[in-house]
Structures are given as C-alpha cells and as structure tokens.
Image (cartoon, rainbow, N blue to C red; front, side, top):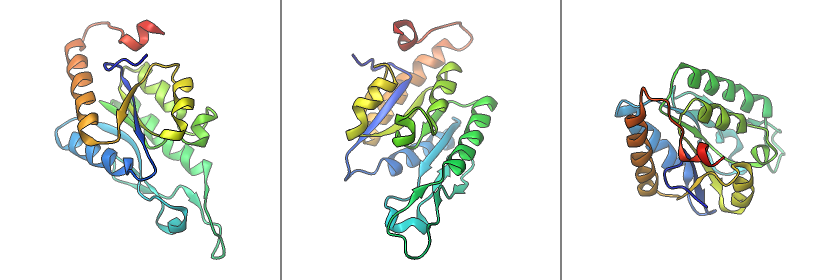
Length: 188
C-alpha cells in the first residue's frame, strides 16, 4: 500500500533515466523559492568517467569526490565509504540546523544493507522533514522492505516530484506549531 501523502518518496528510475538532473534541478528551484533543501545528488553516471564521478551537497553547492582512485589501469570504480559517510555527516548537521526537504542521492548497495546514507532517512523523518531518494527500479523491492512499505513511488520526472512536494509541503505548512503524526507514522 502506498500513501500519496507520505513524507517519504522514492523517485524510481530506469537505466535510461537521469534522476540526478531531476533532483538537482528540483533542489535548486526549492532553494531559490526560499525552502531549504539539503542532501546529496550524484553528478556523474558511469565508472568509466571516474575522475568526473562525484556528488554535490545541494545545500552548499560543494562537489565531493566519493569514489576511490584505482589508478590509470583500472576498468571500474569503487565507492569510498569513508568519503560517503563524511558527506553524510555534513547532511546530518544540515538536518540539525533545519531543513524543509532531505534528498538522498541513491538507494544503492550500501543502503540496501542498512549502511551508507540510510540513517539520514530515519533522522530526517524523526525530525518531521520529508525525504526523497532516487531508487533504481531493480532495487525497488529492497526499498519497500527497508521503508516497511511506507513510501510513495514517484515516476522519475519533475512533474511527479512537484506534485508530491506540493501536497506534502502544503500539509506540513498547515501543521506547523501543532503536534502531529504523518499518515506513515500512524500506520507504522
């Protein structure tokens, strides 16, 4: 069961789609409109481009290299978990300073195992901050297990993301100052 008003959204994408561009542009527009979007968006797509493969903290604009340099003869890339966790710590601090939305760049292998940036989802939701995360379609079943089914599934496009945000932000604006629980919290 999916709740379209849930504060947790999965932007589900196929191999030929670019969730990074959708999330980056959305975060930029939110920040311009006076909201505070915090989080991480990947700024590269293939390990072949390892020197250019990085991520950006959407609340500071800072580029972060998250992959190990395996040398000139390498045919792939490897995530540097330490660098990922360092970026996660910066996002956690930004959450503590106040945010309107948290963006997590991927539900990847680390997150499937309960590692990586998965703790930021719980941290943000515990602070009543909506979260959107890019989830590859082949990992959607694992995502549903991780989220205990309490997530809305969004198409990987700006229209779906804007519609979700509009509903969630309008509801949250109406709840400011009142002790409330989201539908997701009630059903847990």
